[in-house]
Image (cartoon, rainbow, N blue to C red; front, side):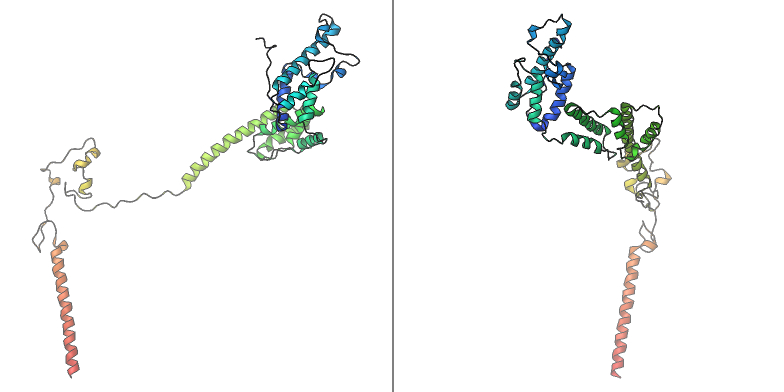
Length: 343
């Protein structure tokens, strides 16, 4: 199907709360189809002192009638788009009632005006409210994306232009942006722009300003992520690490290989430790002198495996002698005490 014949609908649910957003989308589509001018002014203002009749009453070859013929076609297109976009019966009736004697098939400007009367705010101070809202709009936080703020300003400008023919120029918007940005991350770029504005030949460019601010915001986000990672690395470096637990070295002899400094459970001769063997490890043989455990004999009990200094039997004997001496001393004291009492 030809693009000129295809009609795209912008659905409207009939709710006043969604009217403004729907109107902006619909207006964009009317502009794409080059028929938005039929919604701006009534037919008597577009053709003062003249009437517009049926479309088949004009000859396209005549330059004087071609403008009226184009209007009738664009009016029919805009009216059809409005009708097909409505899902609410009340809104649909407001559009279908927009007809005149000269335009019995539908009057787009009247339909658009009926929608405004039905859903647009009725407060007479709306224009001033929008202007004040624009003037007081400020970007406060560095974490807020500047595009959100730019979009808010553009919506207010568009609303004022469409509804009240009040145009806030790009130059005024440029000045508003540079004087209403509070985050410190934009201070340098704003100071540079303000200095350049002192040059009489300087021409403000709103799109370039938005681009520069947007890039600063993106850079600040990536820098903050890098700073956080660096901070974590620095913090990890300066924080005291837990000291590794010191394992006291075994000073005795291994019962498997006879070497000092480790236990049999850790000995490489232990079959359980085969996976820990070095590449060039050779298992010791019983004939190896270092693998033969040195035999020690106790001079007190005559048993092998310990010396007299570590002999438990000697220690027990010594402890028994001490007990006997203590009992003897106590008994002697008791006897002396009784003898003293008899005297």
